[in-house]
Image (cartoon, rainbow, N blue to C red; front, side, top):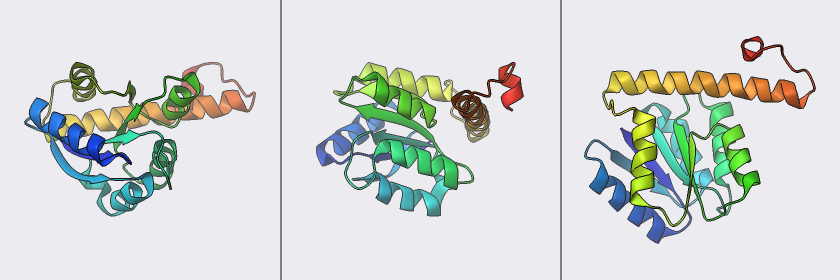
Length: 165
């Protein structure tokens, strides 16, 4: 699995990369960035080469929320996002999940929690084919939830979740 790490704190980026390399032999951290804009520029040119983005939520220039939103709107095959934050506030969690994040972890990052989230994402099946299928399923669910959210926001509540599809 190919991963990029996005955080404005270089020490956190390096520490997270070290943890990922230690916990998962099948993870390749292909790059790391100090803000969402640099990460998005990389994704535009390499979106098929990145399976997972682990991003901080609050960064200068472009936040993690903005990165997720922009990637999901503009990329044909956006990667899956896991968000890191030092803020345990519902509004942050709601915003990132609404924009398509797979999960949300609080800093300081606990190795066992990170491992659990990544294993949940991969389903312990780390072949290219199964990873591709998992990404497709998650993207389809993300799009359906986004449509349902937009309908509810506009007071056009569908009879069922299927009506949002």
